[in-house]
Image (cartoon, rainbow, N blue to C red; front, side):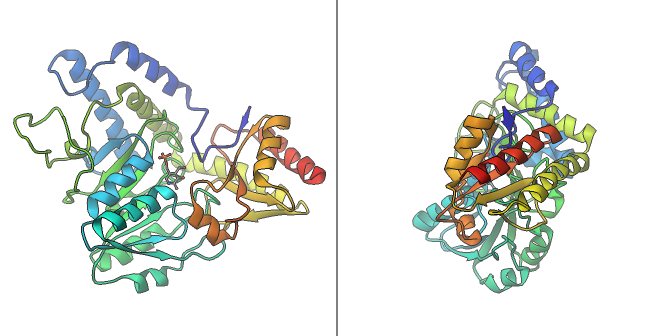
Length: 376
Ligand SMILES: Cc1ncc(COP(=O)(O)O)c(C=O)c1O
């Protein structure tokens, strides 16, 4: 299989990730931080090692400010619902994934919050002047994706953070498409949600939420934390506040090895490789008659296209059936983004490139698009 669906999850991981998962299951498959016996203490140390590496990757001083989550969606829910209270206002963008939009809609229903959607242009770019204009006296949170999962367009999150902080508003980033793929300076953000299984190249079922020092969130789940068992209330301290229940030790240890791989290789090296593969593909398909490419040039390694007159789902099926190429077609859980790009009726075909893809794979994908565009 030629796997070009890395924006959904990375399929090929660094070899040491697979080994670490198996090794941890065999040697460290005990409940971390619950017992005082050696194996439980060691498992806990391994979890902390993963956090130390993640903190180093994201330029965060205190690894304890990261809470593990099952995926980005879980982390986004913890952040959004943890911050918003009755009557608050939140600003999001029209490029958000449903994992931001739906928790916000849920808060609208159950907490009577209000929200503003900043409209991006047809390349998915946000004018930061519109952000300042959307701020209201009760704006509590600005939440935006770092990079669109549909077309890859990147947002100027540091400019947005500056505006938010000027107005004493919390700023949160959905780093689903950027964590591991772009250098993120977490120290400039209040909150960010990240997956372990996409650009970080760790196992599925991993992710996390960074919460800056001094910020205590309302919880969406409470329970055993292995700490303060004498209290009937959820602890206030991080990460216990957000980490109830047994953690997935083997997967998190695998994520730790993935983070080590990225620290050793350098996120910038990974970014250059992915960008090179994506640009190579994009230059060639852009030149084909009838092919439209969406999004801006400032982007992560995603190339979203349509072939004139062809149904995107049919194209993806042909890529699968005739060329063994895996891509994702349709609306990508991001209807607002598709409306912004003008593809809400058609959807599009998304090719997303990863560090372990090769030029020869990309050449085969280019050839496949060419042949399909001639055939349909
Ligand atoms: C921008 C964005 N946000 C959120 C998510 C949800 O991520 P997860 O599958 O890790 O819950 C995705 C997944 O593709 C995404 O691309």
